[in-house]
Length: 237
Image (cartoon, rainbow, N blue to C red; front, side):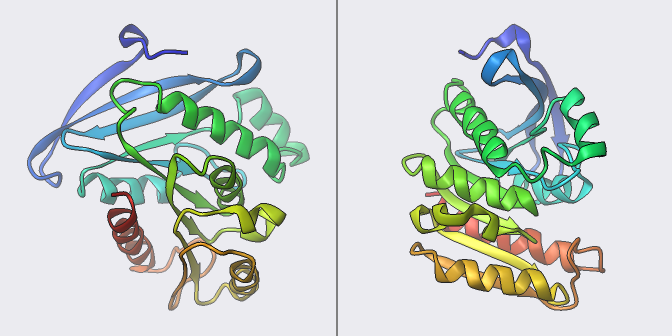
């Protein structure tokens, strides 16, 4: 489906932190399979030539405070972002009770692939170099999608991710991948270390001292944002 100007409500934002330049932002609905539409927030700094798609974790959404914080840091580096819901409202309501969707990595990855195809069809973003930022189970979905979209996904960052849930597809990821884990998140550190053994791409494990799984400790999310920004600037080129 092609981009339609009248379907997107663009808002201009003057943010002094973004090199004193305008950024356009829009609340959008993204078409995926079977007439399903996913809600998203598309933010594009004026000089953006890169875009990062955020893939949230279990029980979260495009409104994730942590992901929005990281996205704002990327905007200041002229990196566009798309934060979107992996589930529809009705699916999310079911998942809150049954949890049947949040660990369905195949479904989440297929949604991400559909959104990736859509964003690369839009005139305003089709020339952008593309990366993924995944969190928790979204990290697994990002790696699965990267393995299947090797021609377009140029970098992946995972925050507190579950790459182990990507299974055999880990060995097919070719995009440079940064795995960020909190220093006090011991079970997830081990999961990420084991996953790295199966990966053959450029890869790095960044352990943030003093951080737990959600990076709620002072300064730890800043560290996540800074190393993620550096990774995307290095490899989305």
